[in-house]
Length: 341
Image (cartoon, rainbow, N blue to C red; front, side, top):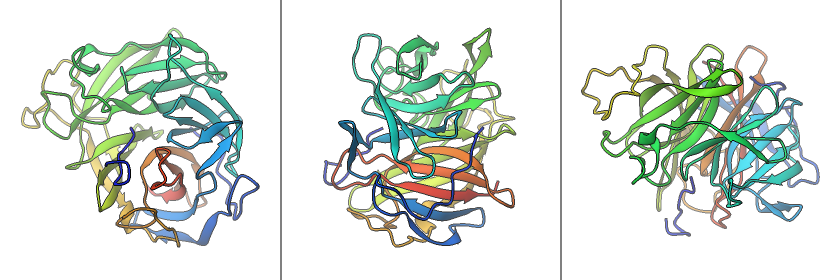
C-alpha cells in the first residue's frame, strides 16, 4: 500500500551474503559491527540505500512491496507499480525486470509475492483483491478464488487499499494477510485467508483473525516451518514518521473465522496469538539519514520481508525493504536483520 507522507499529503534457498560494499548498482552498503541489538530477539546487521532513486532498463527501481528468495538463490522483488524484478542476492543489483498487468492489460497494484516450487510467481494485489499465478515472464496463468466478504466494497466489505498486502507459503498452501479490518469488524481485527493446495491448484481454506496494534496495519507476513508467522505491522503519522513493529504470531489454535460475519473481539473467537519481537524504532540507526521526520532515521515505509536463511547460532536471517512511493521524501532501503524466535 502506498503510505502517504508529509510531502505527498500524507523456505529460503540461499542466505544473503554478508557483503560490505556494493557494485555499480549504487553506493556502498552501510555496515558496522555485527549484531546491533534492537531487542532481545532482533538485531540489525546492516542497511543499504543502493537502489534508491535508480532506474534499470528504463524502469524505476523502487516501490518495493514484497520480496522472495528465488529457486536459484537470487531475490525476486515486486513493485506496486506493476514490475517484477530479479535482484542479485549479494549486491542487490537488478538482473532483470518484467512488467505485470491484469487480464485486460491494466497495471496491477502488486503487494505480496511467493515463488512457488515450480518457479511460478504467486502475486497478490489489493485493488480487487486477487491472487494470481504468473509465469516468470509475467504472463498470467490463473487466479485463486477469493471470499466475497474480502472484496472491496460494494462487492464486499473491505476498504480500498486495505486488502491483500502480505502473501506467504503456509502449511503446503498459501496465506494472505488483509491490511485493515473489514467493515463490520472491530477496528484493528484483520483477517488472514488461507488456501490449500489441491491437484495442482488452490482451494479456499481456513481464515483467522489477528489483532493489529492501534493505528497500525499489516503490510507483510512470512510463514516459518513450524507453522508460526513473522508479521510486520506498520503505520505513519505526519510530522512524526513511521511505526514499524515485528511480531511472532501463532495461528495454530486460532478459530476459523471464515463463517463468522463480524469479528468483535468479544465473541469467544480465539485470535492468532502474537508476541512482540521488536519495535524497529529501538534499533541503532547505524548512521542512516532520513529525508523526513522519523522517530529513528533508520526507518522508512517498510513493507517487504523474506527469510533468506539462518545465521550461525540458528537465528533467522530476515531481509526487509521499504516502499519509497517514488517520493523524494522517502528512501528505497534494504535491512538485514537477525531474528531469534
